[in-house]
Length: 210
Image 1 (cartoon, one colour):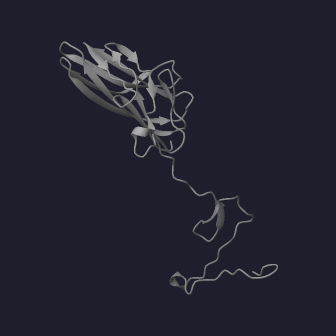
Image 2 (cartoon, rainbow, N blue to C red; image 1 turned 90 degrees about the vertical axis):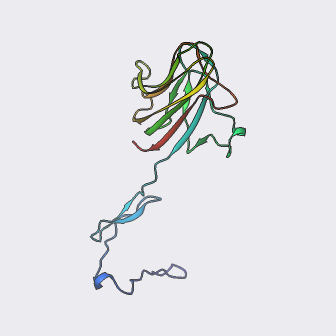
Image 3 (cartoon, rainbow, N blue to C red; image 1 turned 45 degrees about the vertical axis):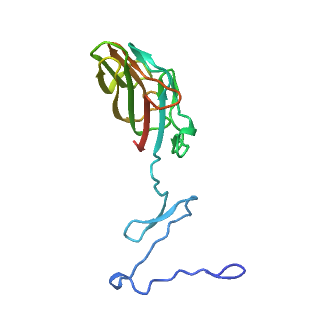
C-alpha cells in the first residue's frame, strides 16, 4: 500500500503457516470506533470489538471518632484517617470511595463488595461485659435494615478487647442498597472512638463487577 506522497505499508505472510494451511482473513465491512481491536471468530472472519478491562478494585477505610457508652447505637461518627499517619499516604485507592451521611454508607458503584468491621471495646467496671458490632444492610434505602454479619466479645472489669466481622454483598442498586453498623452492649462496655488512630474502623473493598 503506497502512501499518497511517499512511503508504503505492507502486510506479509509468515514464512510458513501451521501445517502449511492456506489461511484467508475476511475484514469487517466498516471501520470500528476508537480503542476497538480486531477479533477473529476462529474461521477467518474478523470483527471490531471493545477489549475487556479489569474490574476496578476500590479500597476505602473509615474510622469511628466518638466513644459510645454502654448502650445500643447506630454508629454515626465516621471519617477517613489522616494521610500523615499512612505510608503511603493514600487512604482511598481505585477511584471514588464510599460516601457517608448520619451513619449510612452509600456505595459509589455496583459490584461485589466486602465490608469488614473491627470494633475496639473497653470495659468500664463490673463483670461479664458483653458487646457486639453488627454490619447491617438495607435494600430499600433505609426503610428496613437487616443484620448481615456480627462480631462479639466480652471482658471483666476494665479490660479491652477487639471483635471483627465481615460481609460480602452483590451491590446492584446503589440508590437502594446501603450499609451501616449497629453496636449492642450489655454491662459497662464502651465502643472506642478516636480521631487520631484506627481503633474502631470499617474497610470497604470492591473486588469486581456484579
